[in-house]
Each structure stands twice: as structure tokens, then as C-alpha cells.
Image (cartoon, rainbow, N blue to C red; front, side, top):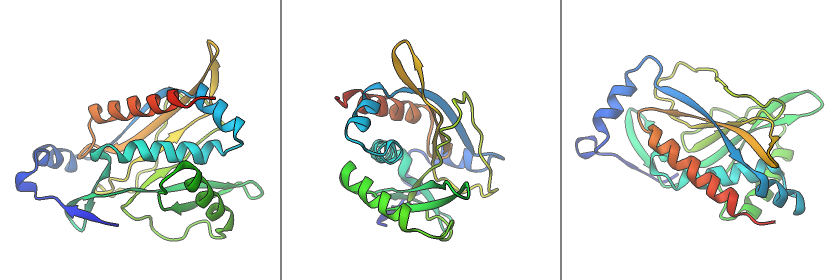
Length: 209
């Protein structure tokens, strides 16, 4: 994927990046709630995959925020032009998941089609190490959690954002989804998480039945 190498001598975030890069645990996770009432009606009406549709929407919103596209690469800091997706897909017979990589498409319809076909056709559970140019997704739709933690590879320069969501539930006539995102603090601060939350909720609100 196309990217540019960041000149750290002229980069406004250089000092902040190094402070968090040297932390014992440079990643952090935030859990929040999304109102998916309109979105859920839409995917049900059009018989679309809830999971694949949400993967596309989250990826689209995150791609629009520059800080979510920074990565460490061979010791340097790079900014990718576009980030693709990697998501877990459950084999219901074995109850084991596989990790599926899908290049981000231009529309939700295209993305769902490509992702669905690739998920069904892929035989291996793992096809190799994930690249830098992905957003990782690992939904857990069996539990309406209020907090979630993740395994840690021990690689401090692993700056790939990880998105999760739990089981949605009813509250005051609305469908509420617990949602979480794990990011590397060298690149993403709370303000950027806030921008993502606002963008996601606005997108979900605008979807009409």
C-alpha cells in the first residue's frame, strides 16, 4: 500500500510519539456505546450482513481520521494513504475463527460482496502475519460487555487499531451496541477517539430505513 515516511524533525507529534513509544504498555482501549437503531433496521430491511456492514462503516470513518493511519515500519513512522481490513470469521462447526484480509472497497455493497466471498472461500484459519495496513476487527456478539481487554504480542511498535463490539441490547426503545477500540498512544489521543465516535454515530444516525 502507498504511504509516506514522516520527517520527525518537522512533525508536530514527534515528542508525544516518542514519550508513548517508550512506555511499558503504549496501547490503550476505550469502550463506549453506539445507537444502532437506524442501522439495524436498514441492514435487516436490505438483508445485509450486520458484521460486514459495520466493518465497512467503521473502516470508512477511521480512514477519514489521519491519526488512525499512522504506523511504525522498519523503525520509521509512516502515514498510509488507505487502511484495509482484517476480521475474525467463525466456523460454526468447529467454533474456531479464521482471520480474513479484505482490501477496502469504494462502497458498502462492493465491500460486503468481496468480504463475504473471501470469508467463505478461505480454508485456512490464518494466512500469515497481518500487515501494517489494516484495521483489525474481532467482534464478540455473545456478550453485552462494559469493558474488554486484549492479548498483547509484546511488540511495542504494533500500532494497528483493533475494533470490537459486543451484543446489542434494548434501552428506551433504542438498540444500543457496546463498542471498543484499542489504539497506540504514540499516534492516537483521546480527542481522536472522540472524533471517531462522533463520526460513527453521525453515520449510523443518517442511515434511513
